[in-house]
Image (cartoon, rainbow, N blue to C red):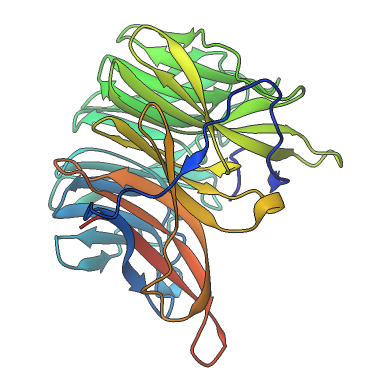
Length: 378
């Protein structure tokens, strides 16, 4: 998966001398009915690249991505089925989503149109309304989005120098320059007056930027425990509260051939309301996602090539890690492999959704592909 403004290749996990490494533990106790399982396989590949996902409740969730006949799809979960609709016309693939309620869902695209325009589609519980933006320098191509209510939201730029935004105030979109924070790669809001951004500068530095309702400021965070030459690259952020912020990063360094960056390992950065601290993620070197519920944080991680291919779901409870391989039971074939894009908590429950693309061999030993939805729960 493309790491935003840098090309990533996987090279395996580097050892960190002198740093305690939490060991991967067994999967959750067998007595628990909560397990990761394949909940839905879209066989025949009617959909793929269902990358942004959001959940409002156990009976209300959305997936967005590629549909048939070059149409981008919105798949809605009503508690029993995933129903497709096609509100985006011929606009590019949805890439970011932000949600506050069933009647306030915002989606932005992965790239600009051939005319250099990007878009935001907003759902009010009944219909989708799409607004397009044409910016001369294509600053808002692949724009993270945050909404805090139907009349308030932000779209952020990928400009590598001056960080810009479009702020919706309920009546109009207002251009704003936030500061020289670099390109915004991820965003999450606690409230209208408490918003976090993960940015990446031209000098290859990750910044954590926070909005207090008046100003945007870079937040001091401790240096990541990393081998010499490595630095954290931001992947995802979740903000359950102002005293509980989680950030997923990968440790990267410049590729030997000069072509972007190579990944070494993964790290989580946590804010508990008073201090920031780093947590090493064992046995993975790509974490595109992160989700939290009731004292535990989950990531889906790709194993380093040095230890074999595959993806695992990993849970950190503040003391130890638990790890379980992404399940293959339920996929209509053998030798299933995955690329897992999304991981979200289902509000009001202890359960989670995850989604990715799967490649496998059919019963007749032919290569097949399908989008797969996973669930953690009964």
